[in-house]
Image (cartoon, rainbow, N blue to C red; front, side, top):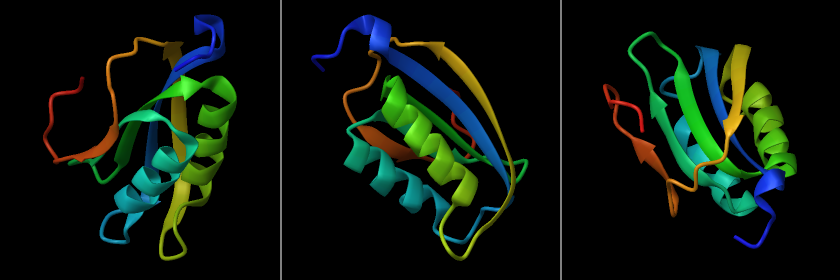
Length: 103
């Protein structure tokens, strides 16, 4: 990644609503990979979808808007986000299984 570290960030976001069983994780992976972001997405046991992504802040903001919309078959009721410093921890973007242990 050739961006200055000051332009890079980490987005930690969770979406609630009808977000399980509707292709939400695949929707997120496709969008994140298209934007060139790294990180992961997972279904959580509380019924939410949790996403942690890193990359340029502008691209992360675009992903956040997509999380608020979701795929056509979803109903997103709310999204909570937290902005954190970029770590460069991942090389790709993928799906994690439910019950994962974070980073």
